[in-house]
Length: 147
Picture 1 (tube, rainbow, N blue to C red):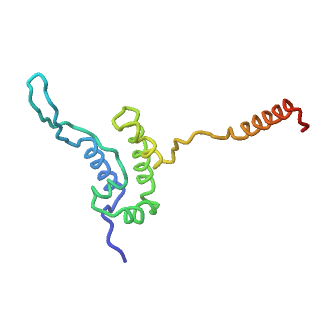
Picture 2 (cartoon, one colour):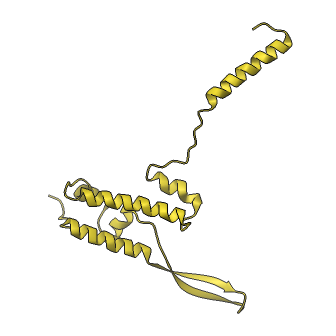
Picture 3 (cartoon, helix red, strand yellow):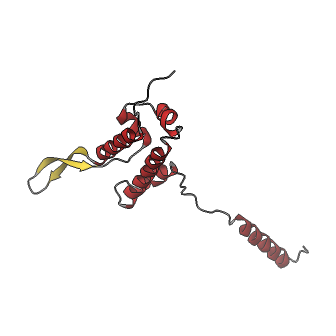
């Protein structure tokens, strides 16, 4: 038999998830900047947020990712809270991009994790082939060649 579950109930997992989100939303970061007014460097502690992830939650809660998926994601009793956690991770990442908390250059990297893609439709090759054959026909006609 494996190790006992860290969270015995859905309520306990939901409470831990809530604590993790509060932890993510309230990171204190020491920043340094130069004050031209006082001609000196100043330091300040600012509140910042980090993106919610299932992996981050596992580290915060002290469980392995595989244990999380084995004990909670695959258990019918916990499936709703696990689904909500995954959805909140996705919404949190999207919100932080839209509010420009996370640089837009990282959008493709982060959002690909949730099934989004930055690829654009490149199905114009068929029309390009048609245009090329029309151009080839026109060149043959100008040269006096028969098709």
